[in-house]
Amino acid sequence: MSSTKRPPGRPRRAATEQAIADAARVVLAREGVARMSIEQVAQEAGVAKTTVYRRWPSKVELAVDAVAATFDAITLTDQGSLLADLREGIGQAATLLSDPSISGAYAALLAESARDPHGVGTLVRGTLAEKLHGIVGDCVQRGIARGEIDPGSVDVDLLGDLVVGTVLHRALMTGSADAGFVEALIALLADVADARAQKRAGSR
Image (cartoon, rainbow, N blue to C red):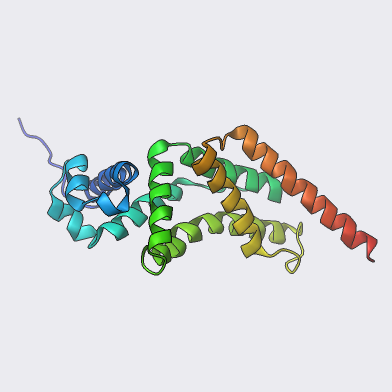
């Protein structure tokens, strides 16, 4: 009886990388960046440490990539309006951050960023912050394309800071970034948008 062996390739490599990333988040949340080691991650993932080193030359790069990869799961389908798009994107991010291994790993990276702003901090800002801000930016660009928003009327970076900062604070500090929180945040953004629109209309 013959059997067909699956040739090595991207599917197997992707599964290995996923296992390493999952393990890295668990170890990072448990140990923090300073005490985390490649050896611990390899043991948690059930792979040789050389397998980890081939993909990530340092534990910091592994830690940042492992957390950033979780947000690749966010898919922004067009919901028909800016606020609906933001609700969808923020809701998915909040759901991910409700996972203790993800929120704990993110918190560990933020703590290390404060101790090493030019090293770890630079990686976190360039990878994690960029991904989360990108969610808001994509929603705003859709709103502009629909004609909902005047391109010059929204500071996208500031809006990203407000939304991302609020979500992270709720998720990491209180652990209550649930659906009710998302709805309250969207309602607040809607009120602000209405107030700005009324102010612009009154100044004409």
